[in-house]
Image (cartoon, helix red, strand yellow):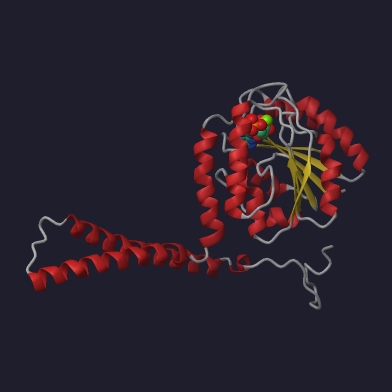
Length: 323
Ligand SMILES: Nc1nc2c(ncn2[C@@H]2O[C@H](COP(=O)(O)OP(=O)(O)O)[C@@H](O)[C@H]2O)c(=O)[nH]1
Ligand SMILES: [Mg+2]
C-alpha cells in the first residue's frame, strides 16, 4: 500500500536516540490507522546511526533510509526526504527525542481544519537560557520583517500538505525559515503548542554559528521572497537616491568652479559626490543584471510564477478535487 502519511526524520549522530524514537513513533502510528512511512535521512553521521536505521528497517518495512555521502546540513536532508516522500501529508520531526511524536495526531487534526502547514510551538522549552533568548529574538525579528505570525518559526516538528513540500525549495540553511517560504507562496499557516523535552542522549549540533548564519539567512529570505522576481525594485531605488544626491553635489561644485572660479582641491564634498554617482550607477546596473537573470529564470520555469490553490471547470485539472 502506498503510504498516506510520511514522517521525515533528519538526523546527524543520533544513534542512541533512534530505537526509542522508532518505538514511540510506532505506538503513535497505531492510533492513526493510516499507511505510513518513516524516512530517516542520515546526513553523514559517524556514530553508526545509519546501521541503527537499517537494523530498524529489518524489523519494520515502514522504515526507509537515506544516507548522504557526507554532512550536507539539515535543509538538504529535509529536501531529500520531501522529494522521496509518497504521502499526501508529511510530518517532520527531530531525531533527538526533544520533539514528542505523541503530538502528531493533533498536528494532523489542525492540518485538516484547512491549513497547509502547521508548525509546533515549543512554548515551554527545555534548552539552555542563551539558546532560548537567541531563539526569542530570532522569532520576533523574523516575524516582524516577514509578516509571518508564528511564535516558533524553526520548530523541528511540523505538518505539511504535499503541495507545500512540492512547491518550496529548501537548501543552504533555509530550513529555519520554512514557514516564511510557505507563507510567501500563499499557503495557510497554523500553529499549535507542543510538548518539548530535554535532550536525553548526544549533544546539540548547532553552536554559536546559528547566530551569524541566522542573520545572513534572514537577509537571503527577505531578498528571495520579496525581490527575486523584481530585483531592480530593490537596487534601483537605492541606486537612484545615490545617483541624484551625487549629481546634485557635483552640479553644485561645477557651478561654483565655473562661475565663481572656486578651487575644488580642498573640497572633500567632491569625493562624496563622485562616490555617490558611481555607487548609484553600480546599483542600477546590478538591478538590471538581476532583472535579466529573473527573466531568464522565469522563461525556464514559467510555472513558478504563481501557485493555484483551487480551480473549477477545467477537465483533468489536478487542483480541482484537492480538498
Ligand atoms: N540532516 C541533518 N540533521 C541535523 C544536522 N544537525 C542537526 N540535525 C538534526 O536536527 C535535529 C535538531 O538538532 P539539534 O542538534 O537537536 O538542534 P537543537 O534542538 O536546536 O539544539 C536533530 O534531529 C538533529 O539530529 C545536520 O547537519 N544534518
Ligand atoms: Mg534538539
